Image 1: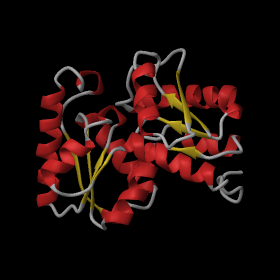
Image 2: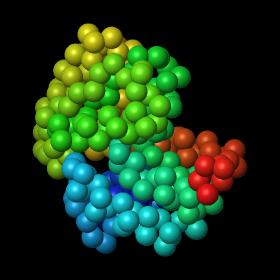
Image 3: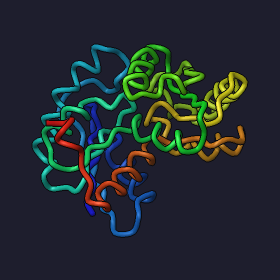
Length: 224
């Protein structure tokens, strides 16, 4: 099985590290390639960023997607996912949708802990569009932008833990990390807070593997 991960940013800075992360979490027999855009912002944290990358993501998917069994757009806002589903005859997975689907199997009252506050309204809109709005009891930001998440990883983990604990006080039963830049810290946070914590990048990978392995793809009654 071959899965393509599209980094919806105009930099290949994280291509190799993300490829290693996906490869280390993939099932035996799954090959993962990672590509980024030739231009665009370095992160997607505003509506302007989102609008800029959407056509670029679709173009990239159309250029190289035919070589793969499934595609992942590696951003929690799922940019271009719905358009690619209408354009490519194979599964296309977004981390937000995959994370919520998995979280919904583990609890009813869901929380999302994401990055700085600017992206939170867009995340809320995506969650509501996917039908999980009534199950979302907390949506919190850690106040750290994407490009600074790795500057002090321990501080980032502590901030996520702090906001996850606040979400638990608001009634959350499952925590979803609302940024693929937070990949790799879910188990550390889960050990601290005591409830399931979903890594969105790994959720998207597992969902892509399941759909491709079951030879399933999006319905043409919806994505025509």
